Length: 333
Image (cartoon, rainbow, N blue to C red; front, side, top):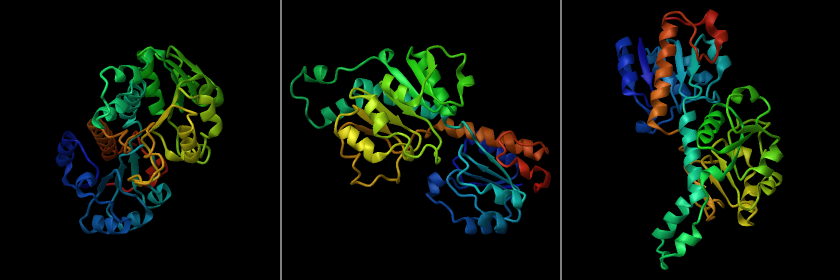
């Protein structure tokens, strides 16, 4: 078995792969390459790779059509936007993915951002570095903040990440409200959690964090109305998708003091243009899409992929198979 690994992978995981056969390890984080699907498929055929493991690359028909010896491909992501599943089924290629791989990492970033917003950690750091600390007692007055136990946290979307955020906040004694009409059964055992309508949640909470899928139903879901309900002493956090929030409405709310500030980890382009309106504002805390970027995320998805690969090699359906329809007609080693 020959494996081409284009995703960052744990040392333990690579050792296990090497015991199964030849491994070419070329993580995109080192090569800085996102491959053309056609050319990648041709290489897979030319060098007789049977297993492909990716994170940033695209698994499209051109790849499947060219990769005659490929029988197993792993996408080290939760979302399946980067793979054409119907084409994989047509070519008999088993696809697995890694749901929940980065939920803990993103949830911890959200908690870190909440602490920074409440205690003005980011703002006071800039204050010192700009040389603005001239009067000894000014920061004590200017950056007086709130303790986390006083927060009413609103979570919009209770998938893997939203559930982790709720659990972490709950342990800190935070009052948590949730908008997600499809997920009530998930948190029955959590204390201090209640379900609310979207507008009621924005009206009652002083920090709202978004954890929704990117689709037609969530496009521009957060607009002037919700931001006005949130209020001038409250914050919005988005580590989910830029399309969920109307950026013009958010900008106006930040400029006009409709809300106190926003923390954003997801953006329409990477990098953000230097002339972005949000960069210019003092009350935005921007991070460059690092929510899931942790060493533990790599360890987690490496383990998931290996378990599914072992299942596949034993003739058992992988736990995280993305195209179970392929199973009766799958390519086999």
